[in-house]
Image 1 (cartoon, rainbow, N blue to C red):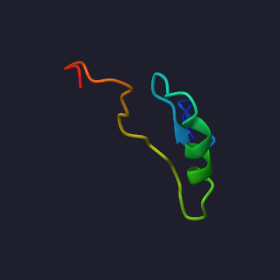
Image 2 (cartoon, rainbow, N blue to C red):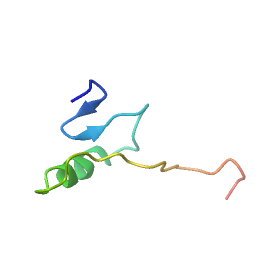
Image 3 (cartoon, rainbow, N blue to C red):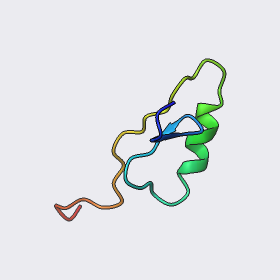
Image 4 (cartoon, rainbow, N blue to C red):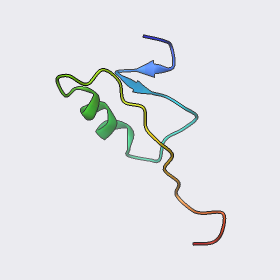
Amino acid sequence: MPKHFKRGVKREHHFLKGIEKPLEEIANIPGVKKVIPGRIYASDSRGF
């Protein structure tokens, strides 16, 4: 697996605190090859 994958989860920049463990659990489900998370933002630049 390429170096930006760790335990089946693609690492891009950083994750929100506490999200890494659930993503690794999803990656451990039989039949799941990779988990590539989408964008999850803690805040919106428009002030919402």
